[in-house]
Image (cartoon, rainbow, N blue to C red; front, top):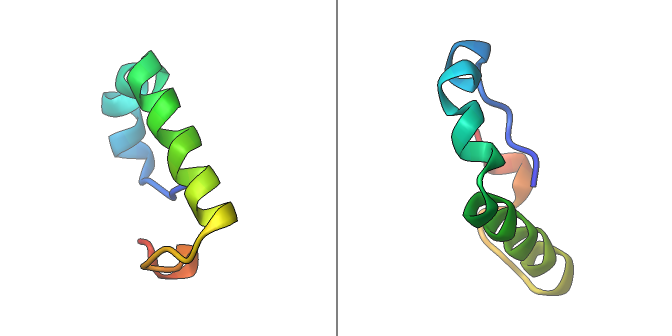
Length: 46
């Protein structure tokens, strides 16, 4: 899952993004988008 995050937030969230739970969550969401209809569509996430 790739979400555009302003650089100022990335520095604060970097450690969180690297944690196992977040990696698992990202993979889960990625698979859900791949295999199911999920809302909102990725283009509408900002």
